[in-house]
Length: 116
Image (cartoon, rainbow, N blue to C red; front, side, top):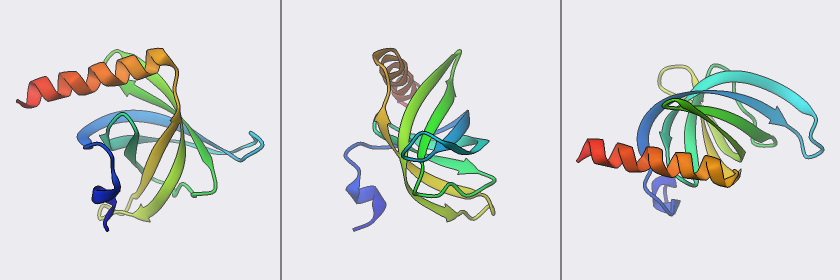
């Protein structure tokens, strides 16, 4: 079964700039950087970054969506070198507040309207 078949929801191709912080289980910061989403839905995203993001970390994301910045906590499911030479990481969202969830849902709704 490939990654696409395991997903509960369709991912939407969307380029959104982001910053991230990697923390361990005790909340200690180990790495931070910048990147962008390649695709996103309400439960996760694929990120592109210049550095690998190891699966042992929890990742704190700040994703730009239109005029808003959404803070989301996630877990790193995988990280591979992509065709462009940059790293692609699959992120499963773990925590976000209701405001962030509402912004993400509206972003996806608007994306659907524009792609019809």
